[in-house]
Length: 148
Image (cartoon, rainbow, N blue to C red; front, side, top):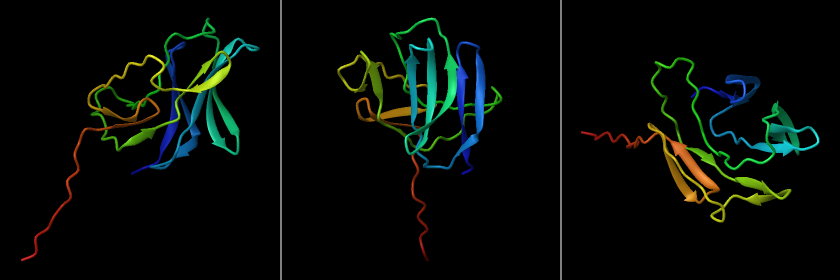
């Protein structure tokens, strides 16, 4: 399976941004942080690198300081809308947090959540809502060869 990269969709400008300097191998952990910076009046999207180091992926003034809806999701980018969706192996998500009153709180069942599945992918919740997996709904059966 080839390496993949980090990308981000800017809903303000309706553009995709690709960060070729960050490549991911299958199984690589990815940790991101989205937070409002009141001193700058902007929202920041950050990618965790290592040793408490973060890379700024996006900075936008969205015209609001509090969001009544946010998303924690997986998404597949296809460069051609006529392409078939790729088979997605299990992609695990965890450590969802919400920043409320200046404090990062674990995203759990105390906060209203809507889980949506978009075909052809599935979302399996292992621990609502912090540990989940997004994947193709294909069952892989082991190949058994009978010896004669």
